Structures are given as C-alpha cells and as structure tokens.
Length: 216
Image (cartoon, rainbow, N blue to C red; front, side):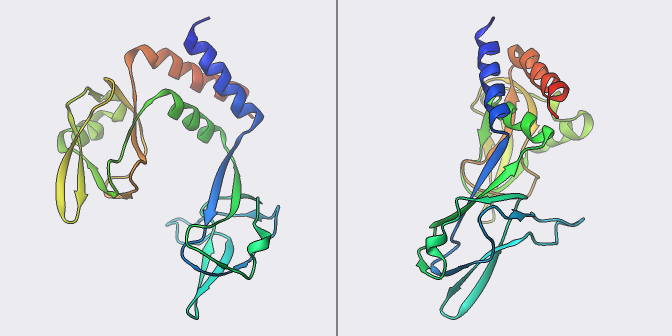
C-alpha cells in the first residue's frame, strides 16, 4: 500500500468519526452580550434565492446604546455556549459559541480534497479576479482544463483601486477546485484555488468515488 493510500485512509477515518465542521462565533465588537439561543439549539444559515434571508439570530451585542443582532452563517447545532458571558461586557473577538455544522457528501469530498490538493491562498484581503487569459480558458473548457506552473500570472488582486498581478508559486498541475467568485472580497490566507498535480489525479478520483459510494 502506498503512502498516499495510508494518508487517505487516515483522513477518511477521521471524517467518518467526526463528520462535522466547527464554526466558532466571536464578538463582532466590544459590548454587552445577550444570547438568543441555548446550548444544543438547531440554527439555520442564510437562505433565499439571492441569499437575502438572514440566518437564526445568535446573540445581541450592545455598545453605547446601539444594539446589533448577529445571525448564523451556517446551519447546525449550538455547542460550547459561553453561558457565563450572558449579560456581561466582552471585548471584540471574544469567543462566544461554536456551531457544529453537519457536513454533506459534497462538503466532505471538498474538505478531504483540500487536504490533498495544493492550496493557493489570498496574499492579502482584497478582491480577486482570474487573469484574462485564464478566465477565457475557464469559460471555454472549464477550470480543470487549465494547467498552471510556477511563475504563471493567474490572478489579479484589486486593492485600493489598484490592480496587481499575482503569480503562482506552487506545484504544477491543473486547477481542480475554485474557492472564490471573481470580484469577491477575500480574507488574507483564504484558499483561492486547489491545484492537482498529474501524479495525484488517481488519488483524487479515488476520494470522490469512495465518498460517493460509501457516505450516506
């Protein structure tokens, strides 16, 4: 058995035993917190055709008589609720609770792939677009038809009304996964694309086939 097979089996077993994504919720700014959910409550994320319906309200935070309600961005179960903070003043960034989000089959595949693919991440918080020639090739034949290698100009970073070319510095391969929509504002360190080297293609297919066949 190859090292790739062993690594894959370990990853797969981990998701089998814990098929959840844990989303920590933090105080958006300093203020007095009032929780609107209890431990173990089911919550919904943003819904609607245009993503215009906010999720379940999780807490209110009041600063200088201004109150802001904060909603869940994902569906799941409230866990690790910091009940001792209810009604108290907290600093910005204080962890308040965790949402335990059950992963769907598609999310499990993508999460496992992110551990196998080479992830090329946003160097700064900015808006990102594919370089014109890359976008043209994606439009014509799809992202997985695009082969890139170190030194290629693949993305344009738009920051403070200035556009800067971003050059790829990872392993050569095809653009297997795209994690952003052109023009979106992306946080620093967030993956933009996942690149698959030629030698990993059989492993990638194995991951997709096995999860589809065995996962409920």
